[in-house]
Image (cartoon, rainbow, N blue to C red):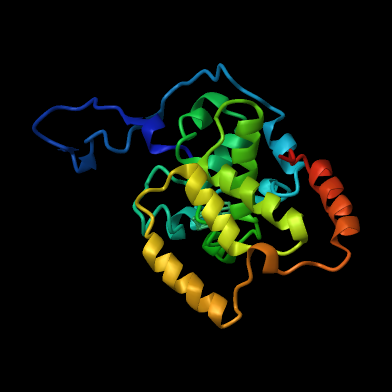
Amino acid sequence: MPIHEKHLIEKQKIIQKDSAELEGRDVSGQWNIFIQQRILSQYHPSMADEIASTPDGRTINRCWQCGTCTSGCCMHTDFGLREFNPRYFIYLAKIGDEEELKKYKDVIWRCLACNKCVERCPKDVRVEEVIHAIDGYMRKKGWMDDTPASRWDDEYVGNVLKTGILDEIMLLRNYIRDEEMKEFNAGYMMRMGMNMLKTGRLRTGPIRHRTKGWKKVRKVAEEILEKDGYELQ
Ligand code: SF4
Ligand code: SF4
């Protein structure tokens, strides 16, 4: 891998206190950089292959570590969560570094799925999907618990599987209830929901939209999900 992390780099200070120059040469030691020696104790050479074999992770090996995804990532820049570094997550997955990857178990699931990284990646890596695949791999291995994002995914899939069309109100209602999101602006959502219901832009509960012949299609959808490694709730 061509890029090494800042925290693995140390500058060796070998020169005198007073001067940084000697006979016209820079002797400050700032040029004298060493990569810290590390021993990977929890190393999984097959990690990248396993991730690449999942539908979301199939483009992981295209990454050449340019960092374009991270520099434009909404979570990393706009929301200032510097630890959220898609390039680094991909790097760790490619070298199979469990120990380092685990340090980000409270961060990696915070992807907003805005897909800005996908638009910008020069190597056509489906970055958002790959991050999702790494997150899924970590949960499958038991390195991290279910997260608000994974619970949202489960709620979403369960909702769509019922009739073949998403019932947004039920999705939000169940998720807010299960996550105990007390700070949620229920009044605003109620008003918006009522207006949408009145104008026929939203259908929920008994009047929700249904896909014709969904019972048959549902079986196929479930088979595909299971084949892709998704555990149906
Ligand atoms: S922009 Fe693409 S190629 Fe560059 S680091 Fe991100 S995923 Fe890898
Ligand atoms: S999809 Fe996720 S990783 Fe990509 S830019 Fe948005 S927040 Fe960042």
